[in-house]
Image (cartoon, rainbow, N blue to C red; front, side, top):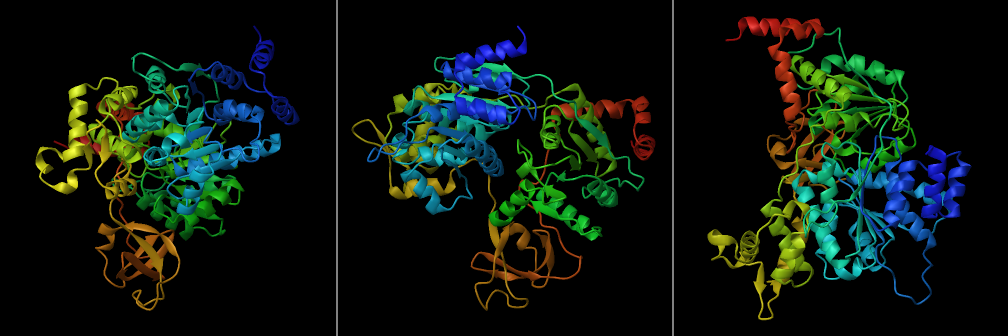
Length: 615
């Protein structure tokens, strides 16, 4: 069957509302086959996993079932009770949720839909989060941690009673970590509230699709899988490795040697997205680019330690194509469609084939146009890592780690969260937990030990009252021992390990923060780094050179400092391991001197010298 008749047949089957067809027609578009197929699958009551390359319209496809259903739903009558959430969108990144709100809001407005869309992340003010509970939006864009908080609320069942769909974006990056384990337990709880719940998984890079298909649906009884839609094709990316004429260092991770060549590429393109692996590298690269920025091009900085207001300003400027370059960490490397980015520069080795594929997909963000990327090795050994990553990308190799059984520490956190929401019966919660794919093989004795650990603190802590977080009542239900326990849970929920950090706040030079409360906050810096500073030391943060004035009331006070001789903060979680796949490819390269001839002469000469001198 040809594409057009098949599309027409599917269109009729799914009954796409007239405003949607008109909106597509006004733009000279037609719904893509996978968008219609996903809509038909969802309307048939099935959960589904969509695997598609960058630019294939995954986001619109994922929201089509929700938008078409909401378009047909009658409006709320005066005096009628407010409805709960209709669709929950879960993203691994706060910036991605904000970007989806921006990109989804435009077609919703143009189609003429009366649909409320809001974000709920760690950046959302407390008053807005409270208001969302009283008057929920129809589509809520959030993160795994916020879902854990929502299901731990006493009114969680009422809040989610109207939930129809959960859309999980960049699913491959969610499921492989403890964040994914916590999210899977959250989905299990949502399924207990709404047994008819459907999930829609969106992903561009998947090594084992069946693992994700099982993850999306209940595994009690085991073996169930979501439907699968795979979109093939897409232009092959144009990736190169910088063969610099400058001296490439033997060690280090700053890539300062390449700054003039990076700046030259920025000038040759409309918008360049520069990725680095750590926040300290981002600060350093940003300073180096401004040092050579003779044309005063608008260049911005984006990483997770910056104040939310600064991050939002940068994101807004990116969306308006007001920037020529953005230096970013992983805060922008998934799914985000920012304006006219036509070049991605990766400074330092990407450390993984899948991570490289994600990041270079940010250029063009269109399926039929190749993404252009340049890899900048920071030292000679990273040339080998970049070559292995480039070869893996052209081969379509994936190095996403395999899924593992759910962590018991995450389960213990979830057990406490459930008790914070409402009393639970151990038998019912055990059966619920086993619906989550990472916990499908959990046995009852292990589950009971986890519940006992939450209730007593385990054999080591059972004599301390403060570790008795839940208690068993005569009615057979487990309850939170004390309201303070629930408060502590809500303040500490999540699996991302945080190190102590202090606000960085402006004051007048020399005031040490004693004259007043100071000016605006720039962001947060790890306490361990600040402890190495003495009054008058300078360091780089938020793209500025700052003078350390002192610490008071858990805040670091700073003033602007001239000069460039400044320290660079180090951050918790700043190291990236090389993936097993790329490590194997690098070892093969090292073991075969014949392959050295294809490497830049500086690198080949270094390897020959190493072979000659090394024992």
